[in-house]
Image (cartoon, rainbow, N blue to C red; front, side):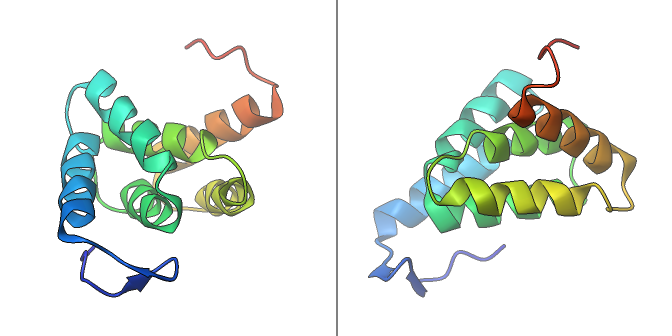
Length: 119
């Protein structure tokens, strides 16, 4: 994903916010699941920018830890972004990658309160 200086959410991105998004994206791709999940949680608060990065990671050619963290970030989204995040997770159920499918199944179950959260 390219983080250009185009309009986002009706405002111009500052250089500082672009640097933060790049840092969070790099942390999301970390091998350490704790670091990746923390980055995903922070991205869940970044509205459309966070949704785009999380979606790219979930559907892209990335490690299992990154995909699981992205699914965690999507299910952690709140407000008006929650419906869009749910739609992304539903799309993931039909994805060709089994890791993506598994992460989406678990996240949807957790969002609906059907899973215990362990495992």
